[in-house]
Amino acid sequence: MVRTRQTMIVPSLLLFVMHCVVSCTSSGSPLLVRAALEPNTACASADEVDTGDAPRVCIDDGCLVGTLRDGMGGEQFEAFLGIPFAQPPVGELRFADPLPNGPWYEQLYNASYERDMCLQRNDLLPNPPVTGSEDCLYLNVYRPKECDDRTNLPVIVYIHGGGFFSGTASSLIVGPEYILDTKRAILVTVQYRLGVLGFLSTGDTAAPGNFGLKDQTLALRWVKRNIRRFGGNEQLITIVGQSAGATSVHMHMISPLSRGLFERAIMMSGNSLVPWNIPTKDPLALARSTAMVVDVMGADRLSGKQLVAALRDIPGEKLVGNVHKLKLWSVDPLTLFRPVVEPKDSPNPFLTEEPKVSWRNGNYQQVPYLAGFVPNEGAIRALSIFKDATLFGELQRNFSTILPILLEQPPSKALTEKMRTRFLNDTTDDEPVRQDNLQGFVDLYSEAAFIYPVQLGVRQYITAADTDRAPASVYKLSYKGRYSYSAIYAGGDTSDYGVVHCDDLNYLFRQPAIFPDYPAGAPELKMVDTFVNFFIDFAINGRATPLAPVRECRNENQVYQSLDCDVQEFVRVGDDVQVKVLSARNEEMFAFWKDFY
Image (tube, rainbow, N blue to C red; front, side):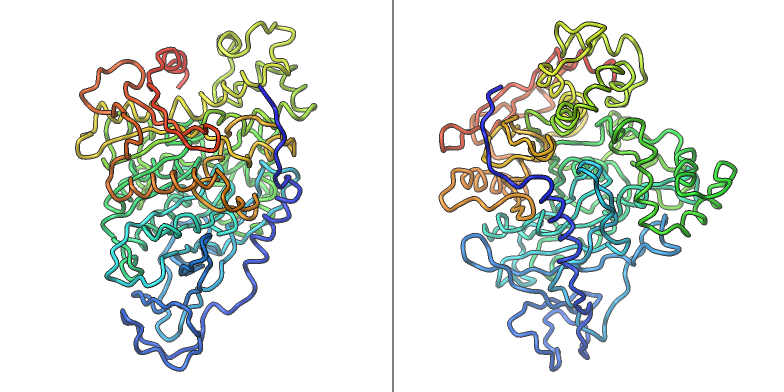
Protein backbone atom coordinates (compact mmCIF):
# COMPACT_ATOMS: atom_id res chain seq x y z
CA MET A 1 0.00 0.00 0.00
CA VAL A 2 1.34 3.45 -0.91
CA ARG A 3 2.00 5.61 2.10
CA THR A 4 2.00 9.39 2.10
CA ARG A 5 2.18 11.85 4.94
CA GLN A 6 -0.80 13.78 6.19
CA THR A 7 -1.25 16.53 8.76
CA MET A 8 -3.59 15.99 11.67
CA ILE A 9 -3.90 16.15 15.42
CA VAL A 10 -2.14 13.22 17.08
CA PRO A 11 -3.68 11.12 19.85
CA SER A 12 -1.94 12.88 22.76
CA LEU A 13 -3.58 16.14 21.77
CA LEU A 14 -6.83 14.35 21.06
CA LEU A 15 -6.88 13.11 24.65
CA PHE A 16 -6.42 16.66 25.89
CA VAL A 17 -9.25 17.95 23.74
CA MET A 18 -11.54 15.05 24.65
CA HIS A 19 -11.02 16.07 28.27
CA CYS A 20 -11.92 19.60 27.22
CA VAL A 21 -15.20 18.34 25.78
CA VAL A 22 -16.12 17.47 29.35
CA SER A 23 -14.59 20.34 31.29
CA CYS A 24 -14.69 23.30 28.91
CA THR A 25 -18.30 22.85 27.85
CA SER A 26 -19.58 22.63 31.44
CA SER A 27 -18.74 26.08 32.67
CA GLY A 28 -20.96 26.11 35.68
CA SER A 29 -23.54 28.35 34.02
CA PRO A 30 -26.88 28.15 35.79
CA LEU A 31 -29.24 25.62 34.28
CA LEU A 32 -32.24 27.82 34.86
CA VAL A 33 -32.56 31.54 34.33
CA ARG A 34 -35.06 33.03 36.78
CA ALA A 35 -38.24 34.15 35.05
CA ALA A 36 -41.90 34.07 35.88
CA LEU A 37 -42.89 32.34 32.65
CA GLU A 38 -45.88 30.16 31.88
CA PRO A 39 -45.45 27.76 28.93
CA ASN A 40 -46.95 28.87 25.63
CA THR A 41 -45.98 28.22 22.05
CA ALA A 42 -44.79 31.73 21.21
CA CYS A 43 -43.04 32.50 24.53
CA ALA A 44 -44.91 35.80 24.34
CA SER A 45 -45.33 36.14 28.09
CA ALA A 46 -41.62 36.17 28.93
CA ASP A 47 -40.96 38.65 31.73
CA GLU A 48 -37.99 40.92 32.25
CA VAL A 49 -35.22 38.48 31.34
CA ASP A 50 -32.35 40.02 29.43
CA THR A 51 -31.31 37.37 26.93
CA GLY A 52 -30.62 39.77 24.07
CA ASP A 53 -31.17 38.26 20.64
CA ALA A 54 -30.87 34.69 21.89
CA PRO A 55 -33.47 32.38 20.34
CA ARG A 56 -36.32 31.02 22.46
CA VAL A 57 -38.63 28.07 22.15
CA CYS A 58 -41.39 26.89 24.46
CA ILE A 59 -42.27 23.22 24.83
CA ASP A 60 -44.66 21.47 27.20
CA ASP A 61 -42.00 21.33 29.92
CA GLY A 62 -41.32 25.06 29.81
CA CYS A 63 -39.40 27.62 27.80
CA LEU A 64 -35.76 27.50 26.71
CA VAL A 65 -33.28 30.13 25.66
CA GLY A 66 -30.61 28.98 23.23
CA THR A 67 -27.70 30.62 21.50
CA LEU A 68 -26.54 31.62 18.03
CA ARG A 69 -23.69 29.73 16.34
CA ASP A 70 -21.67 30.64 13.27
CA GLY A 71 -21.93 28.38 10.26
CA MET A 72 -19.04 27.64 7.92
CA GLY A 73 -20.32 30.07 5.28
CA GLY A 74 -20.68 33.06 7.59
CA GLU A 75 -24.40 32.79 8.35
CA GLN A 76 -25.65 31.90 11.80
CA PHE A 77 -27.94 29.16 13.02
CA GLU A 78 -29.67 28.53 16.33
CA ALA A 79 -28.52 26.02 18.92
CA PHE A 80 -30.44 24.74 21.93
CA LEU A 81 -27.93 22.81 23.97
CA GLY A 82 -28.08 20.46 26.92
CA ILE A 83 -31.86 19.98 26.96
CA PRO A 84 -32.85 17.33 29.52
CA PHE A 85 -35.04 14.50 28.26
CA ALA A 86 -34.75 12.28 31.33
CA GLN A 87 -34.16 12.53 35.04
CA PRO A 88 -30.49 12.15 36.02
CA PRO A 89 -29.84 8.37 36.18
CA VAL A 90 -28.23 8.47 39.61
CA GLY A 91 -28.99 6.91 42.98
CA GLU A 92 -31.92 4.53 42.64
CA LEU A 93 -32.12 5.36 38.91
CA ARG A 94 -28.68 3.88 38.23
CA PHE A 95 -29.26 0.52 36.50
CA ALA A 96 -32.93 1.44 35.99
CA ASP A 97 -35.08 2.42 33.02
CA PRO A 98 -34.95 6.17 32.37
CA LEU A 99 -37.75 8.40 33.60
CA PRO A 100 -38.89 11.57 31.82
CA ASN A 101 -37.60 14.80 33.31
CA GLY A 102 -39.92 17.14 35.17
CA PRO A 103 -41.11 20.54 33.89
CA TRP A 104 -39.63 23.95 34.72
CA TYR A 105 -42.75 26.11 34.41
CA GLU A 106 -41.55 28.89 36.71
CA GLN A 107 -38.19 29.38 35.07
CA LEU A 108 -36.46 29.85 31.73
CA TYR A 109 -34.12 26.98 30.90
CA ASN A 110 -30.60 27.96 29.87
CA ALA A 111 -29.94 25.95 26.72
CA SER A 112 -26.96 28.03 25.65
CA TYR A 113 -24.18 25.60 26.62
CA GLU A 114 -23.46 21.89 26.45
CA ARG A 115 -23.63 19.46 29.37
CA ASP A 116 -21.22 16.68 30.30
CA MET A 117 -20.76 13.59 28.18
CA CYS A 118 -21.80 10.33 29.83
CA LEU A 119 -19.29 8.77 32.21
CA GLN A 120 -16.85 6.67 30.18
CA ARG A 121 -13.40 5.24 29.67
CA ASN A 122 -12.46 5.16 25.99
CA ASP A 123 -10.29 2.06 25.62
CA LEU A 124 -9.36 3.01 22.05
CA LEU A 125 -7.19 5.85 23.35
CA PRO A 126 -3.81 5.40 25.07
CA ASN A 127 -3.96 5.44 28.88
CA PRO A 128 -7.57 6.64 28.86
CA PRO A 129 -8.89 8.58 31.84
CA VAL A 130 -12.42 8.25 33.19
CA THR A 131 -14.30 11.31 31.98
CA GLY A 132 -17.85 12.61 32.00
CA SER A 133 -20.73 12.48 34.43
CA GLU A 134 -23.59 10.16 35.31
CA ASP A 135 -25.91 13.15 34.94
CA CYS A 136 -25.70 13.16 31.15
CA LEU A 137 -29.09 12.50 29.59
CA TYR A 138 -29.31 15.61 27.48
CA LEU A 139 -29.79 16.38 23.82
CA ASN A 140 -28.93 19.27 21.49
CA VAL A 141 -31.23 20.78 18.86
CA TYR A 142 -29.86 22.83 15.96
CA ARG A 143 -32.08 24.70 13.51
CA PRO A 144 -31.71 27.38 10.82
CA LYS A 145 -32.53 30.93 11.90
CA GLU A 146 -36.09 32.15 11.46
CA CYS A 147 -37.58 28.70 12.08
CA ASP A 148 -40.88 28.42 13.91
CA ASP A 149 -43.59 25.83 14.39
CA ARG A 150 -44.75 26.34 10.79
CA THR A 151 -41.41 25.63 9.11
CA ASN A 152 -41.89 21.87 8.89
CA LEU A 153 -38.29 20.85 8.13
CA PRO A 154 -37.16 17.21 8.08
CA VAL A 155 -35.49 16.11 11.31
CA ILE A 156 -32.22 14.18 11.57
CA VAL A 157 -31.59 12.56 14.96
CA TYR A 158 -27.96 11.47 15.29
CA ILE A 159 -26.93 8.67 17.68
CA HIS A 160 -23.19 8.69 18.26
CA GLY A 161 -20.96 5.64 18.03
CA GLY A 162 -18.21 4.49 20.35
CA GLY A 163 -18.76 0.78 20.86
CA PHE A 164 -21.43 1.40 23.52
CA PHE A 165 -18.58 2.40 25.86
CA SER A 166 -17.61 5.90 24.68
CA GLY A 167 -18.78 8.88 22.68
CA THR A 168 -20.55 12.21 23.03
CA ALA A 169 -23.11 14.48 21.40
CA SER A 170 -20.81 17.49 21.84
CA SER A 171 -20.49 19.86 18.90
CA LEU A 172 -16.71 19.56 19.31
CA ILE A 173 -17.08 16.03 17.92
CA VAL A 174 -20.50 16.15 16.23
CA GLY A 175 -20.40 19.62 14.77
CA PRO A 176 -23.70 20.64 13.17
CA GLU A 177 -22.30 23.25 10.78
CA TYR A 178 -22.30 21.23 7.54
CA ILE A 179 -25.93 20.16 7.94
CA LEU A 180 -27.17 23.52 9.20
CA ASP A 181 -25.45 25.44 6.42
CA THR A 182 -27.84 23.79 3.97
CA LYS A 183 -30.87 25.22 5.84
CA ARG A 184 -32.66 22.04 4.75
CA ALA A 185 -32.96 20.12 8.03
CA ILE A 186 -33.03 20.26 11.80
CA LEU A 187 -30.38 18.24 13.62
CA VAL A 188 -30.78 16.61 17.04
CA THR A 189 -27.84 14.91 18.77
CA VAL A 190 -28.46 12.72 21.81
CA GLN A 191 -26.50 11.21 24.65
CA TYR A 192 -27.14 7.90 26.34
CA ARG A 193 -25.62 5.87 29.16
CA LEU A 194 -22.53 3.90 28.19
CA GLY A 195 -20.56 0.86 29.25
CA VAL A 196 -21.37 -0.73 32.59
CA LEU A 197 -23.77 2.10 33.50
CA GLY A 198 -25.73 1.74 30.29
CA PHE A 199 -25.66 -1.98 29.66
CA LEU A 200 -25.08 -3.95 32.85
CA SER A 201 -27.75 -6.60 33.36
CA THR A 202 -28.43 -9.19 36.04
CA GLY A 203 -30.59 -11.25 33.69
CA ASP A 204 -33.69 -10.63 35.78
CA THR A 205 -35.98 -7.74 36.66
CA ALA A 206 -33.49 -6.32 39.19
CA ALA A 207 -31.52 -4.89 36.25
CA PRO A 208 -32.99 -6.14 32.95
CA GLY A 209 -30.42 -4.17 30.92
CA ASN A 210 -30.40 -2.12 27.70
CA PHE A 211 -30.63 1.12 29.67
CA GLY A 212 -28.57 3.02 27.10
CA LEU A 213 -30.92 1.97 24.31
CA LYS A 214 -33.94 2.88 26.44
CA ASP A 215 -32.36 6.31 26.96
CA GLN A 216 -32.29 6.68 23.19
CA THR A 217 -35.94 5.64 22.92
CA LEU A 218 -36.94 8.21 25.52
CA ALA A 219 -34.99 10.83 23.56
CA LEU A 220 -36.85 9.84 20.39
CA ARG A 221 -40.15 10.21 22.26
CA TRP A 222 -39.03 13.69 23.31
CA VAL A 223 -38.26 14.57 19.69
CA LYS A 224 -41.59 13.21 18.46
CA ARG A 225 -43.44 15.23 21.07
CA ASN A 226 -41.51 18.51 20.89
CA ILE A 227 -39.72 18.98 17.58
CA ARG A 228 -42.58 20.85 15.88
CA ARG A 229 -42.01 23.70 18.35
CA PHE A 230 -38.51 24.03 16.84
CA GLY A 231 -39.82 24.02 13.27
CA GLY A 232 -39.38 20.29 12.63
CA ASN A 233 -41.78 17.84 11.05
CA GLU A 234 -42.53 15.14 13.62
CA GLN A 235 -43.76 12.93 10.77
CA LEU A 236 -40.40 13.13 8.96
CA ILE A 237 -37.82 11.98 11.50
CA THR A 238 -34.72 10.14 10.28
CA ILE A 239 -32.51 8.40 12.81
CA VAL A 240 -28.85 8.25 11.83
CA GLY A 241 -26.04 6.42 13.60
CA GLN A 242 -22.44 5.44 13.01
CA SER A 243 -20.78 2.26 14.34
CA ALA A 244 -22.52 1.51 17.66
CA GLY A 245 -24.89 4.32 16.73
CA ALA A 246 -25.73 2.40 13.55
CA THR A 247 -26.27 -0.72 15.64
CA SER A 248 -28.60 1.34 17.81
CA VAL A 249 -30.55 2.55 14.76
CA HIS A 250 -31.01 -1.03 13.61
CA MET A 251 -32.11 -2.05 17.10
CA HIS A 252 -34.75 0.69 17.09
CA MET A 253 -36.18 -0.81 13.90
CA ILE A 254 -36.46 -4.09 15.81
CA SER A 255 -37.57 -2.93 19.27
CA PRO A 256 -41.29 -2.71 20.03
CA LEU A 257 -40.50 0.26 22.29
CA SER A 258 -39.46 2.40 19.32
CA ARG A 259 -42.36 1.71 16.99
CA GLY A 260 -43.70 4.83 15.31
CA LEU A 261 -40.97 7.14 16.58
CA PHE A 262 -39.18 7.62 13.23
CA GLU A 263 -39.81 7.33 9.50
CA ARG A 264 -36.32 6.71 8.02
CA ALA A 265 -33.11 5.03 9.15
CA ILE A 266 -29.47 5.50 8.10
CA MET A 267 -26.77 3.13 9.36
CA MET A 268 -23.13 4.01 8.86
CA SER A 269 -20.71 1.11 9.44
CA GLY A 270 -22.84 -1.12 11.57
CA ASN A 271 -26.13 -2.83 12.35
CA SER A 272 -27.55 -5.23 14.91
CA LEU A 273 -25.95 -8.27 13.23
CA VAL A 274 -22.34 -7.25 13.92
CA PRO A 275 -20.45 -9.73 16.14
CA TRP A 276 -19.79 -7.10 18.80
CA ASN A 277 -23.57 -6.87 19.28
CA ILE A 278 -24.11 -10.58 19.95
CA PRO A 279 -26.13 -10.44 23.19
CA THR A 280 -24.36 -11.32 26.43
CA LYS A 281 -25.18 -14.96 27.13
CA ASP A 282 -24.81 -14.89 30.92
CA PRO A 283 -25.38 -11.32 32.11
CA LEU A 284 -25.60 -12.36 35.78
CA ALA A 285 -22.10 -13.86 35.64
CA LEU A 286 -20.76 -10.65 34.10
CA ALA A 287 -22.54 -8.58 36.76
CA ARG A 288 -20.94 -10.68 39.49
CA SER A 289 -17.51 -10.35 37.90
CA THR A 290 -18.07 -6.61 37.72
CA ALA A 291 -18.85 -6.51 41.42
CA MET A 292 -15.70 -8.47 42.18
CA VAL A 293 -13.36 -6.03 40.39
CA VAL A 294 -14.77 -3.15 42.46
CA ASP A 295 -14.34 -5.10 45.71
CA VAL A 296 -17.93 -6.03 46.49
CA MET A 297 -17.65 -8.74 49.12
CA GLY A 298 -19.23 -12.11 48.39
CA ALA A 299 -20.31 -11.02 44.92
CA ASP A 300 -20.40 -14.59 43.64
CA ARG A 301 -23.20 -15.41 46.10
CA LEU A 302 -25.37 -12.32 45.72
CA SER A 303 -28.73 -12.30 43.99
CA GLY A 304 -29.46 -9.90 41.16
CA LYS A 305 -31.26 -7.54 43.51
CA GLN A 306 -28.40 -7.62 46.01
CA LEU A 307 -25.83 -7.04 43.27
CA VAL A 308 -27.66 -3.97 42.01
CA ALA A 309 -27.92 -2.55 45.52
CA ALA A 310 -24.21 -3.10 46.11
CA LEU A 311 -23.16 -1.64 42.76
CA ARG A 312 -25.28 1.47 43.31
CA ASP A 313 -23.09 2.23 46.31
CA ILE A 314 -19.89 2.16 44.24
CA PRO A 315 -18.74 5.56 42.93
CA GLY A 316 -19.36 5.76 39.21
CA GLU A 317 -15.75 6.68 38.46
CA LYS A 318 -14.50 3.59 40.28
CA LEU A 319 -16.99 1.37 38.49
CA VAL A 320 -16.21 2.69 35.01
CA GLY A 321 -12.48 2.85 35.71
CA ASN A 322 -12.10 -0.79 36.76
CA VAL A 323 -14.22 -2.92 34.44
CA HIS A 324 -11.45 -2.99 31.83
CA LYS A 325 -9.86 -5.58 34.10
CA LEU A 326 -12.49 -8.02 32.80
CA LYS A 327 -11.16 -7.87 29.22
CA LEU A 328 -9.81 -11.17 27.89
CA TRP A 329 -6.88 -9.69 25.95
CA SER A 330 -5.67 -6.12 25.59
CA VAL A 331 -8.93 -4.13 25.21
CA ASP A 332 -10.86 -7.06 23.75
CA PRO A 333 -13.66 -7.71 23.55
CA LEU A 334 -14.03 -4.01 22.85
CA THR A 335 -17.73 -4.00 23.73
CA LEU A 336 -17.82 -5.80 27.05
CA PHE A 337 -21.19 -4.42 28.17
CA ARG A 338 -23.70 -4.64 25.36
CA PRO A 339 -27.38 -5.21 24.62
CA VAL A 340 -29.05 -8.28 26.10
CA VAL A 341 -32.25 -10.21 25.51
CA GLU A 342 -34.37 -9.15 28.46
CA PRO A 343 -36.26 -11.59 30.70
CA LYS A 344 -39.81 -12.40 29.67
CA ASP A 345 -41.21 -10.76 32.81
CA SER A 346 -39.31 -7.52 32.26
CA PRO A 347 -41.86 -4.70 32.63
CA ASN A 348 -40.56 -2.55 29.76
CA PRO A 349 -38.39 -4.72 27.49
CA PHE A 350 -36.41 -3.15 24.65
CA LEU A 351 -35.28 -6.49 23.25
CA THR A 352 -37.27 -9.71 23.62
CA GLU A 353 -35.31 -12.00 21.29
CA GLU A 354 -31.90 -12.02 19.65
CA PRO A 355 -31.64 -9.32 17.00
CA LYS A 356 -30.58 -11.81 14.32
CA VAL A 357 -33.76 -13.80 14.96
CA SER A 358 -35.99 -10.73 14.80
CA TRP A 359 -34.31 -9.52 11.63
CA ARG A 360 -34.38 -12.89 9.89
CA ASN A 361 -38.08 -13.39 10.74
CA GLY A 362 -39.22 -9.90 9.75
CA ASN A 363 -40.08 -8.80 13.30
CA TYR A 364 -39.27 -5.13 12.83
CA GLN A 365 -40.63 -1.80 11.71
CA GLN A 366 -40.32 -1.45 7.95
CA VAL A 367 -39.00 2.00 7.08
CA PRO A 368 -36.81 3.20 4.21
CA TYR A 369 -33.23 2.57 5.21
CA LEU A 370 -29.78 3.38 3.94
CA ALA A 371 -26.73 1.31 4.88
CA GLY A 372 -23.13 2.32 4.32
CA PHE A 373 -19.56 1.21 4.92
CA VAL A 374 -15.96 2.19 4.16
CA PRO A 375 -13.25 -0.03 2.63
CA ASN A 376 -10.90 -0.42 5.60
CA GLU A 377 -13.29 -0.61 8.54
CA GLY A 378 -11.06 -3.15 10.28
CA ALA A 379 -8.20 -0.68 10.67
CA ILE A 380 -9.85 0.40 13.92
CA ARG A 381 -8.41 -2.69 15.61
CA ALA A 382 -5.79 -4.01 13.19
CA LEU A 383 -3.64 -0.86 13.22
CA SER A 384 -3.46 -0.62 16.99
CA ILE A 385 -2.30 -4.25 17.16
CA PHE A 386 0.19 -4.16 14.28
CA LYS A 387 1.68 -0.84 15.42
CA ASP A 388 2.29 -2.07 18.96
CA ALA A 389 5.24 -4.47 19.12
CA THR A 390 4.03 -6.06 22.35
CA LEU A 391 0.49 -6.68 21.11
CA PHE A 392 1.67 -7.95 17.73
CA GLY A 393 4.11 -10.35 19.39
CA GLU A 394 1.34 -11.68 21.61
CA LEU A 395 -0.91 -12.14 18.56
CA GLN A 396 1.83 -14.09 16.77
CA ARG A 397 2.53 -16.36 19.74
CA ASN A 398 -1.11 -16.90 20.71
CA PHE A 399 -2.87 -16.59 17.36
CA SER A 400 -5.29 -19.48 17.89
CA THR A 401 -6.39 -18.01 21.22
CA ILE A 402 -6.53 -14.29 20.43
CA LEU A 403 -8.12 -14.42 16.97
CA PRO A 404 -11.34 -16.04 18.30
CA ILE A 405 -11.56 -13.28 20.92
CA LEU A 406 -11.32 -10.63 18.20
CA LEU A 407 -13.96 -12.41 16.10
CA GLU A 408 -16.28 -13.25 19.03
CA GLN A 409 -16.07 -16.92 18.08
CA PRO A 410 -15.26 -20.09 20.06
CA PRO A 411 -11.66 -21.18 19.46
CA SER A 412 -11.11 -23.98 16.97
CA LYS A 413 -8.39 -25.15 14.64
CA ALA A 414 -10.82 -24.90 11.72
CA LEU A 415 -11.41 -21.21 12.46
CA THR A 416 -7.75 -20.24 12.46
CA GLU A 417 -6.93 -22.33 9.39
CA LYS A 418 -9.79 -20.87 7.36
CA MET A 419 -8.85 -17.32 8.31
CA ARG A 420 -5.23 -17.88 7.40
CA THR A 421 -6.14 -19.45 4.07
CA ARG A 422 -8.49 -16.63 3.03
CA PHE A 423 -6.67 -13.59 4.43
CA LEU A 424 -3.12 -14.44 5.49
CA ASN A 425 -1.55 -16.24 2.55
CA ASP A 426 1.67 -18.22 2.96
CA THR A 427 1.77 -18.02 6.74
CA THR A 428 2.95 -21.00 8.76
CA ASP A 429 2.03 -22.60 12.06
CA ASP A 430 5.20 -21.14 13.57
CA GLU A 431 4.45 -17.68 12.14
CA PRO A 432 0.67 -17.50 11.62
CA VAL A 433 0.71 -13.75 11.00
CA ARG A 434 3.45 -11.38 9.81
CA GLN A 435 3.83 -7.62 9.64
CA ASP A 436 3.32 -7.71 5.87
CA ASN A 437 -0.12 -9.22 6.50
CA LEU A 438 -1.48 -5.89 7.75
CA GLN A 439 -3.86 -5.31 4.83
CA GLY A 440 -5.03 -8.91 4.99
CA PHE A 441 -5.77 -8.53 8.69
CA VAL A 442 -7.59 -5.26 8.03
CA ASP A 443 -9.69 -7.07 5.40
CA LEU A 444 -10.39 -9.93 7.79
CA TYR A 445 -11.67 -7.64 10.54
CA SER A 446 -13.50 -5.39 8.06
CA GLU A 447 -15.52 -8.24 6.63
CA ALA A 448 -16.25 -9.97 9.93
CA ALA A 449 -17.12 -6.96 12.05
CA PHE A 450 -18.70 -4.64 9.49
CA ILE A 451 -19.03 -5.35 5.77
CA TYR A 452 -20.53 -8.85 5.87
CA PRO A 453 -23.15 -8.08 8.56
CA VAL A 454 -24.05 -4.77 6.89
CA GLN A 455 -24.68 -6.47 3.54
CA LEU A 456 -26.35 -9.48 5.15
CA GLY A 457 -28.79 -7.14 6.87
CA VAL A 458 -29.80 -5.54 3.57
CA ARG A 459 -30.08 -8.91 1.84
CA GLN A 460 -32.37 -10.31 4.54
CA TYR A 461 -34.45 -7.15 4.51
CA ILE A 462 -35.16 -7.13 0.78
CA THR A 463 -36.31 -10.75 0.88
CA ALA A 464 -38.95 -9.97 3.53
CA ALA A 465 -39.85 -6.26 3.48
CA ASP A 466 -41.96 -4.31 1.00
CA THR A 467 -39.23 -2.47 -0.89
CA ASP A 468 -41.73 -0.37 -2.82
CA ARG A 469 -43.01 1.16 0.40
CA ALA A 470 -39.79 0.94 2.41
CA PRO A 471 -36.75 0.63 0.10
CA ALA A 472 -33.22 -0.24 1.18
CA SER A 473 -30.05 1.16 -0.38
CA VAL A 474 -26.31 0.76 0.09
CA TYR A 475 -23.40 3.18 -0.28
CA LYS A 476 -19.64 2.81 0.09
CA LEU A 477 -17.53 5.81 0.99
CA SER A 478 -14.06 5.41 -0.56
CA TYR A 479 -13.26 9.12 -0.83
CA LYS A 480 -9.76 9.77 0.56
CA GLY A 481 -9.33 13.19 2.15
CA ARG A 482 -6.47 14.83 3.99
CA TYR A 483 -7.62 13.81 7.48
CA SER A 484 -8.10 10.25 8.71
CA TYR A 485 -8.84 8.45 11.96
CA SER A 486 -6.08 6.00 11.04
CA ALA A 487 -3.52 8.15 12.88
CA ILE A 488 -5.49 7.63 16.09
CA TYR A 489 -5.70 3.87 15.62
CA ALA A 490 -2.02 3.69 14.62
CA GLY A 491 -0.79 5.54 17.68
CA GLY A 492 0.21 8.72 15.87
CA ASP A 493 1.51 7.19 12.63
CA THR A 494 0.18 9.50 9.93
CA SER A 495 0.90 7.22 6.99
CA ASP A 496 -1.86 6.53 4.49
CA TYR A 497 -3.88 3.46 5.46
CA GLY A 498 -6.80 4.14 3.17
CA VAL A 499 -10.33 5.09 4.21
CA VAL A 500 -10.89 3.67 7.68
CA HIS A 501 -13.65 3.34 10.24
CA CYS A 502 -15.11 6.76 11.14
CA ASP A 503 -13.56 8.58 8.17
CA ASP A 504 -17.03 9.11 6.67
CA LEU A 505 -17.86 11.30 9.66
CA ASN A 506 -15.39 13.86 8.28
CA TYR A 507 -17.91 14.69 5.54
CA LEU A 508 -21.05 14.78 7.67
CA PHE A 509 -19.92 16.66 10.78
CA ARG A 510 -17.36 19.29 11.63
CA GLN A 511 -15.02 17.81 14.29
CA PRO A 512 -12.92 20.65 15.70
CA ALA A 513 -11.71 18.58 18.66
CA ILE A 514 -10.07 16.10 16.29
CA PHE A 515 -9.29 17.70 12.91
CA PRO A 516 -8.62 21.24 11.68
CA ASP A 517 -11.24 22.81 9.45
CA TYR A 518 -10.79 22.31 5.73
CA PRO A 519 -9.38 25.49 4.19
CA ALA A 520 -11.58 27.55 1.89
CA GLY A 521 -11.78 25.95 -1.53
CA ALA A 522 -10.52 22.57 -0.31
CA PRO A 523 -11.65 19.68 -2.54
CA GLU A 524 -12.95 17.85 0.53
CA LEU A 525 -15.68 20.47 0.81
CA LYS A 526 -17.15 19.09 -2.41
CA MET A 527 -17.42 15.73 -0.67
CA VAL A 528 -19.03 17.42 2.33
CA ASP A 529 -21.64 19.05 0.11
CA THR A 530 -22.33 15.83 -1.79
CA PHE A 531 -22.54 13.60 1.28
CA VAL A 532 -24.61 15.93 3.46
CA ASN A 533 -27.18 16.52 0.73
CA PHE A 534 -27.25 12.79 -0.09
CA PHE A 535 -28.34 12.17 3.49
CA ILE A 536 -30.83 15.05 3.61
CA ASP A 537 -32.38 14.00 0.28
CA PHE A 538 -32.88 10.53 1.74
CA ALA A 539 -34.43 12.02 4.87
CA ILE A 540 -36.90 13.94 2.72
CA ASN A 541 -37.69 11.40 -0.01
CA GLY A 542 -37.22 8.07 1.74
CA ARG A 543 -35.11 6.79 -1.11
CA ALA A 544 -31.40 7.15 -1.87
CA THR A 545 -30.85 9.58 -4.73
CA PRO A 546 -29.28 7.69 -7.67
CA LEU A 547 -26.19 9.81 -8.31
CA ALA A 548 -25.33 7.37 -11.10
CA PRO A 549 -27.48 4.75 -12.89
CA VAL A 550 -28.04 2.14 -10.19
CA ARG A 551 -29.83 -1.20 -9.86
CA GLU A 552 -31.86 -0.87 -6.68
CA CYS A 553 -32.18 -3.44 -3.91
CA ARG A 554 -35.68 -4.77 -4.54
CA ASN A 555 -37.84 -7.75 -3.66
CA GLU A 556 -37.98 -9.00 -7.22
CA ASN A 557 -34.22 -9.13 -7.69
CA GLN A 558 -32.73 -12.58 -8.19
CA VAL A 559 -32.05 -13.92 -4.71
CA TYR A 560 -28.52 -15.23 -4.54
CA GLN A 561 -26.70 -16.15 -1.41
CA SER A 562 -25.21 -12.64 -1.38
CA LEU A 563 -26.75 -9.23 -1.95
CA ASP A 564 -28.00 -8.75 -5.51
CA CYS A 565 -28.13 -5.02 -6.18
CA ASP A 566 -25.81 -2.07 -6.74
CA VAL A 567 -23.76 0.02 -4.33
CA GLN A 568 -23.11 3.72 -4.91
CA GLU A 569 -19.43 4.29 -4.19
CA PHE A 570 -18.11 7.80 -3.46
CA VAL A 571 -14.54 8.15 -4.76
CA ARG A 572 -12.03 10.92 -5.34
CA VAL A 573 -10.76 11.63 -8.83
CA GLY A 574 -8.31 14.50 -8.71
CA ASP A 575 -10.10 17.29 -6.88
CA ASP A 576 -13.54 16.03 -7.80
CA VAL A 577 -16.08 13.67 -6.27
CA GLN A 578 -17.32 10.87 -8.47
CA VAL A 579 -19.96 8.25 -7.77
CA LYS A 580 -19.27 4.85 -9.20
CA VAL A 581 -21.66 1.92 -9.28
CA LEU A 582 -20.53 -1.45 -7.95
CA SER A 583 -22.35 -4.74 -7.86
CA ALA A 584 -22.83 -5.80 -4.25
CA ARG A 585 -22.73 -9.45 -5.20
CA ASN A 586 -19.96 -11.24 -3.36
CA GLU A 587 -20.75 -14.93 -3.24
CA GLU A 588 -17.32 -15.79 -1.89
CA MET A 589 -17.65 -13.50 1.14
CA PHE A 590 -21.15 -14.73 1.98
CA ALA A 591 -20.20 -18.39 1.56
CA PHE A 592 -17.22 -17.91 3.84
CA TRP A 593 -18.83 -16.03 6.73
CA LYS A 594 -22.23 -17.75 6.86
CA ASP A 595 -20.65 -20.65 8.74
CA PHE A 596 -19.48 -18.31 11.49
CA TYR A 597 -22.24 -15.72 11.87
